[in-house]
Length: 509
Image (cartoon, rainbow, N blue to C red):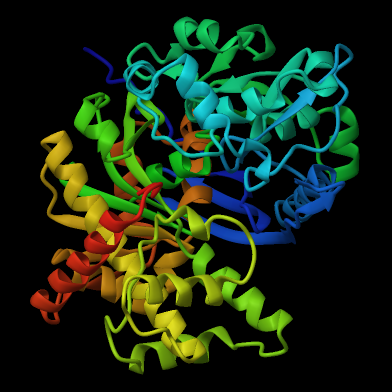
């Protein structure tokens, strides 16, 4: 007589907190995750306001940390004082410097600060762009971490530094007392070889960058410490609460949160930036890829995020700020409705033009870009908004088409995740421009990717990316857009931008 062992009990649902830091705001989300369930709620949101001091634009990172602590207190209240874990994700390239005692050496400098002006040219004189790309696979953006470090060379702050932590790693350090450098965000420094998934000694040596500044590398799912006793007390939490390294670059977490059913998809993670590309199993390091300004950033589970950075909804956000400052505030819902009625493709601009990178009067810069290329200037906020959204849809189209051509991977669907998934006009225009069906959602893809990696590390769920994405498809609301409209009109508008790009130099997309 044989006895059949009883099946192992299913893992109990866990309550996890995702700290998700964006360029304009931060939030703390609470997720209740089980093998077949996933419910997410926002418990705290706080602004991320840069501060200009002495001519330098800084992040107010202590205010961000205050917001994180307040958010963890709200998360604890929502979870009855007990959390199964915490994960932190945020934007890329920026960092904080610590002294030998672990104290912060000043507020981190904002990537939009002008200190990196000319730094790319200095790097190119020592390490030609083709060699740098072959070693790191990263697109040339004027604010990449290597350019920030070259710009900071010789400053007292960098000379005094004994540790460099990327922004999510800095927040994790303050929460736990443990230092580490999570690999997906490390890959945006332009100091990591995407083939070895380790630092590039060649690049560091040629540029005189001390890799000893960086804490040991860790990957998504690795333990990152426990919340400090004083954090537990301030947040009203019962310990121990583990902190898990997630895809700490918010785009890496957002790509985990893409609810794709197979591999033949493109993604567009939309927010302040649009990150448009493909998920691959190996980097594309060809000269053609470099010339097209595609980047190879590292993702979860050994993947590569092959993508292009596009200015994204920053263009519209900065227009809204400008109109507000000029005493002409715009209601976003009404503005988008009016933009939907405006003449399509009347005027379009290159959404990768570095002229749009800095803060300032965005409507004026957009109008000037239209005039330079012989197109009508937008006359109203609705026309400006329509120009922005048509231009973003065309930038999405170009990125998706070129990513396929350069990688050899064909796609049948475009997934839009992040805040832009709520923008129905942008989603519809992207479907029309690309000629591909668009699946929009989830809007909180980064937070969802964050908690899914935590839940897997805790044993609440199992499997790889396919399993996590299957859970998203059954638990998250999605919207579908089929392509329509006049393909010839989109082709002509794309040609207009290409002709304008050919007349100018220095574009970054």
